[in-house]
Length: 586
Image 1 (cartoon, helix red, strand yellow):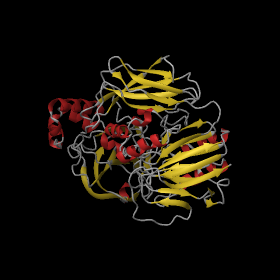
Image 2 (image 1 turned 90 degrees about the vertical axis):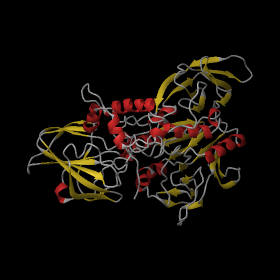
Image 3 (image 1 turned 90 degrees about the horizontal axis):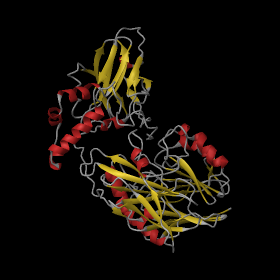
Image 4 (image 1 turned 135 degrees about the vertical axis):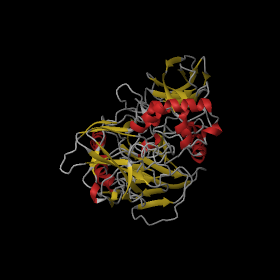
């Protein structure tokens, strides 16, 4: 089964809907977590149960959690069928109390078996409660049908808004973040009803049991996690990010050209980032500064901070040359905030100090919604990202459970030139000297990006064209035929030189490919590559006839050098040993 993570669904903002001026589920949980921090020790937080939570909450709070997770209006008397995964140990506390009755019916997909609970509702408002205090990812979903045969049911005033509907039948999907997980068994009496689709991310909305985390690397007044990005012209601009404790509210970048004493100050903008369940560092302040008016091919030294919080160590960066003079870059496959990747990354900076930037092809961390994992990512990378810009794309672990990649977007400052209808800084493009880089967030729907991808490739006069995409079009684990059919034709038409991917945790470099067939030389086709930046090993190792080189284990990284019409590609292990290489001449 092909696992695909799609466009962030309507619950992106963690159930922030409101019923008129009344309290929301989010507000109840925000307040409850604050009180829990005040009243319980860290050890006690790890032991709370459903019974404790229900006793801890007020009657009003319980009522909100029982009625404001999903609400809508119906124009006729209906039966609401609620499909609950039978593997969930504790049913939602409100389910039986509100009048739902468990039936003998079952609904099944390839992964889960759901028991069916039903309740009759009169014409008017239907109110349903939370999935539970656990984080049970296969959350419940519902279907709605008429009590009286022949009535035409209409749904209105749905909260959360922009609800999407399907027909309840075999072959329908229920989770937008896993659209290939379709129903395989549906009772006859439910077929044809209105199916309310959802996302697995809704399991997080009331998560309190075994929920609390702590970061090993909490924020301090002094800036850390200093990272460079390119959001504008790399010849004349640079973006700098960092974090501090919440009590530091102002920040600046002080920068100067090498061998000068003239210091320029640029004020930084600030946002507060919250991870509600991070018990020892719930809030941080995150700063971002856009440096402009820089001179091409110039080394600048800089530090960030403030008088109140202190200053970072001095680091440096170099702007792009005004005319193509050759450049190199390094890209990594999945990093998953691994210390093995971090140790390798630090070696690459010492080994290849000339590189212009780094790229990571998705899955920077394993759970993109958890800020403690981003703390590990930055800690393990040392200071390399304060010297070389990072130009990443999200993977399915960074944009998870249909909730989007909000924390990823908050932590980086990337180009905003992606498809107009999609969230910014996740799919984008940039040019560096004579090369175009089309950076694609594969967790969005394919068709939402196709026209934009073609526009980037068609309108660029760059000599070299690269695509970075987390999901590999050619691999032996998952068949991304839709990517090959919809985007591969564009890569062929506009002669993309190389497509760089990750996701499947092994290394592969393909022979030149065109129209899904092997061709003689890179002049006639595209090279597809896959890499992995953490330890890995595949026991099963079927043949891949399109592969020119591959191996089962990581970590490795890729160094690409471009000089005019010549490209030298090398895959290296952490010690710098070349494991694969290729030269392309144009």
